[in-house]
Length: 341
Image (tube, rainbow, N blue to C red):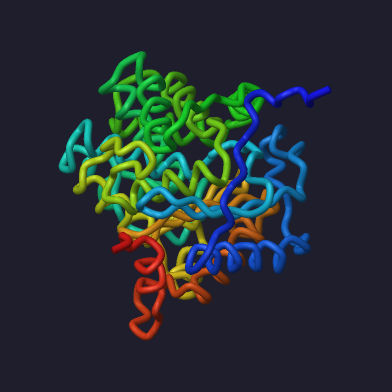
């Protein structure tokens, strides 16, 4: 009796060779090196995030040509949290224009905590769009310009950057809305100084929802690769962002993206990046690749402990630091993505 054929079976994946195998080996090495690190704590000030299994860990890289390398729990979804600030800022640059965007939010690093209820005294505007005040200002202007369809447009843009359909974690959204009193206070402060002219509750609803969108480490890598690829998704060839918005966004990610750890990150990793208290970090190797890491235990600055150290390791091994002229990293990735002759 002949065996029953297996329907919808996944075809075997050809083994990696050459530079691709070497890169996958380095990612596997970083995963093995840091998976045992149990330092850090969950973001328990958002009750739903306190329930996340703390040992989850994933590393992914997507090249500008759409090649993906990964290790660990890459299928696990987590909420994007503050990594969302990158993409809503880029959206506002495109929708409102550069001049109008910078009337709503400044571009200077801040030495204060990311959730500080504080504006720049020189013009009563948030210091930058990567802290909560700046991201809420951006959300307010998006809600003002796009009306009630603002979140639909945000979700659609995030999906285009990731190259797949995304969903909101309703439990996390409700948890943030129920406990986000500090962010609500920031929203009222911004409304009081005329940063936006729409109801604060509607702005915060948009902000909490954007933070509650579910992604994987691979999604973050692809979204980072979209920025690295001058705004074009490498998997779908969709032109998600224009070059000017991409350039400004990457610049602010480099100076302000890692909370109070931005200086250490720029020294040790040397890439534009953004972290979120859900445990994700998205890094961008300009014109070459995106990096996505996920591990929910956070350091004192709110950055993923395992994620931070694995990015540091990859930057050193592959040569990713933007300002190290002796490092052959750019050559390494170019060899990987160079067209065959």
